[in-house]
Length: 416
Image 1 (cartoon, helix red, strand yellow):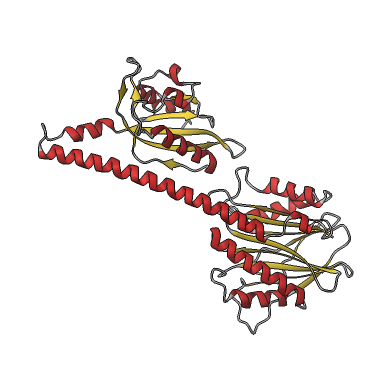
Image 2 (tube, rainbow, N blue to C red):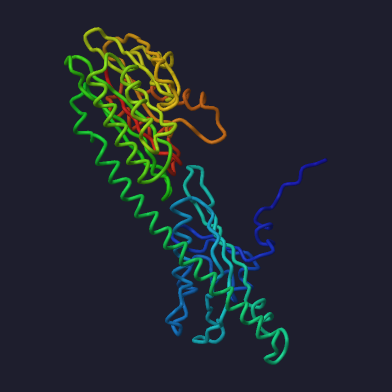
């Protein structure tokens, strides 16, 4: 059977519904035949024009919200990269043949992103289904003011009212989630040491990148601490399961507890044992993970232990990468107290680089974790001669998706 090339431009024009393509600036790029027919405008009258120059709100209706609601939906699609189905809208349209006369119209819009090669939203697919005639027909059913017709009109009014209420409720929820995200980020930023605080730690660089989306502020954290003997440094990262303010609060408690435990523990395993016992009594710390390393600059060695976390990467000066995965154990609250956690040790030469990170850097949906780890190792190997600040930026640029990751990311780079 011979393959037939598909003319997608013809398919677009033949779609059985009103469909338009908009730029991120909300300018029409193209419309299909049904959209032109349903809107009462020709393709030439639409393409290249700003959406709301063609379809503004009815100036005779002070309660009109169609334009505001539609713009909010389109902006959400651009910001989140996700499809947005709107509630039933009343959006009046000016008669193109009788300027100043507005027709009462009802629409059911859906907006979806179209991504470019870089992963960013290139265009917005704007599909609308007009339901004006359906509402009018149902309102007319039953004849002149009959009981059936009256009930239908009541039902349609109720449908429209409930749709408006649902949309307003969704908007309030989005605003509340946005405020929670801002507070959680501020709390997280206040509890994590900033780059100036860690700059004296043997040329260390730290980065934190929140997840995209209003609900995805999570509990990733990092810490660097000078140990009591003066020639060792404790470097840790961790991840709390959950989102928002609760995860940020738990993150702060665990980070502070590990920082204190590291100062008095004999090694990283003992520090995680103490942290695990503490996690048992912290609500929200279930399944939290952490990895901590003690770097001894006199002996040129690293002791490490992991509580269910991804392994740190040691990049040797010759480009060889070593996963520190020989002391990996269960998450913080999942180990019986009498059983000590494992601990391992490795050596390094001056000029090596130690990298700790959280799963947002390497995990991708539908992809094996080993693929993400290999991608990280390759990036570190190629950029190993860069200073820690530049190396951290290069790794984030190469590994995080262009539109941002769906999980937050913490990263520490230490030049040894």
